[in-house]
Image: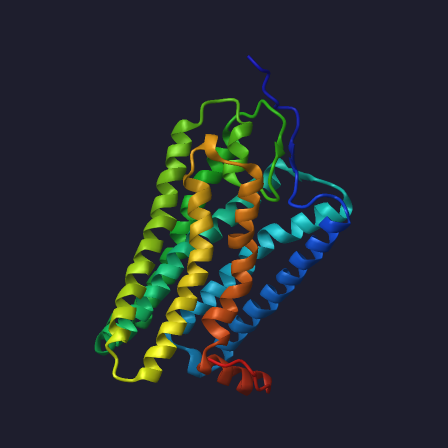
Length: 312
């Protein structure tokens, strides 16, 4: 039996890019995406906090999405950039657990929050007279607290388990952050029970919310199709299709990565797919969900004194 590696307290992140000029150029692009995502999400949070006209359930949910995206991308990209630029690849075992906890918390919480946002739009368009009751401030707060609480609880359970399983191989994680599927092959015990729990968690926190979002937008599109205003139908279809595209960019790679059996996984493929839900989506969400909205553009004019040129 292979001797368990209990002496080393560090893990190694093999990273995303090769250590050459091409890798450096790609890293700078990722850092630019980090900057844009940070500015966009921070601006959205500030706008919603200071502008009373945005103090509605939809924008409270948007503010939480921006906060999650800000924490999401900050959990993975800075460490990846530091390791590449410094030539180091190490991360402490405890640091790996902390990174995994925050990543999983944001992933699960955002999955639930996106479903809440889709429900909000469904009620607003399909049941407008019931909207003040179904999406009251109390209901909105429950949705937000529930998303954070359930996400953190699920993440804590996975993090505790991943930190307590024995590792008998090299602790070289073939990824750019401490992702659970990338860490399981390093364990020197049978992890099929835990892999089944990962399957269950992915289904509950990602697959089912995605199906709910698809059903909600399907019902919205059906209602929009019967609208009398041709211009209104055109704008609604454009908005819904854009939202569904971004949601698919988030859920599809995530679900595909976490629901596949281990023997069908490829580290290179997993890292490419992870770029969509850890890096690109946090940058796109402020633009798609917020900056194409007339009320948000009006708030930017009032708060920042600028007149955006984006068209709805």
